[in-house]
Length: 375
Image (cartoon, rainbow, N blue to C red; front, side, top):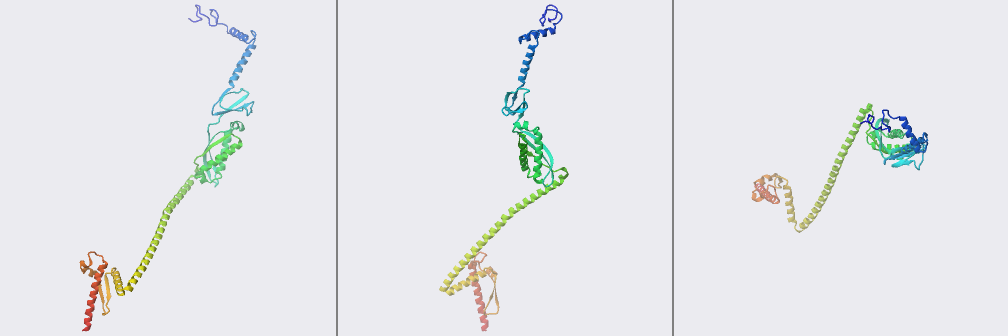
């Protein structure tokens, strides 16, 4: 049964049974008096209420002064707008500062932030180049970052633009777009850090990445031709170097081989000359012992050496006016195999057999000539 239904339900406002609800103004006045008596005021007076309001406001004010600083953050505290080194920088943890008296500003000092920029600038050789870059930075001095400069990020942008233009203006276009890009990044980072330190921004430049630059679109076709010509130059230089690396060792090898052959020829000629000299000395010694035999032997050796390299011989006979023609190749073919052997090449013994036949033929021819003269 509902409380306001007839039949004896209880009034939740503490009144008896009735159709009319209680007076709210009277109820509020009742509780106000109780609250005033609790804080020492008389009934009907507002001093106790004011004190309660002040206590509640003080509690709220106290609670509003509680704040937490994360491990990645540091807080800068200003008391009446003034920084004090003794309490001005607060680390991680739970802290309290009086609201409306102290101003707390928290900054993330470990986060690596990025700033990207792109612009056209003039190089040392008066060419226009467009370079995009990215600056990675963090906060190394939170006090300077918050208090020394009104807008640290704006100072960073302006300093980056100044450092990049100064570095690019000291380099040629080819270096900026190709080989010198890494050195350009280092120069821009060093110069930018110097500017930021001079401004007192409290920013630490971690790294400067300069992406691949490109010339303006108006001259891109001409620049592509320059790049192609440079690549052709490098290719030709590499080919010439490869040819040089191949031909020079080969020429040195041929020269060394000729030197070795010359030394070998020299040693051979000297050795043969020395051998001939010793052989001549030995022949001379034998000639002194038996001149006729040695002379005959030398004659036979000379004849053998001459006949080894010829197949036809013309002999001048002293007792006649005709030349004797000796076809040695035909004689060899007619000679029996038992006398000259089975080999096709002539040896010393073969030459001796042929020489004997030639001498015998000469004797017969000489004898016939003498008989004709006697007649």
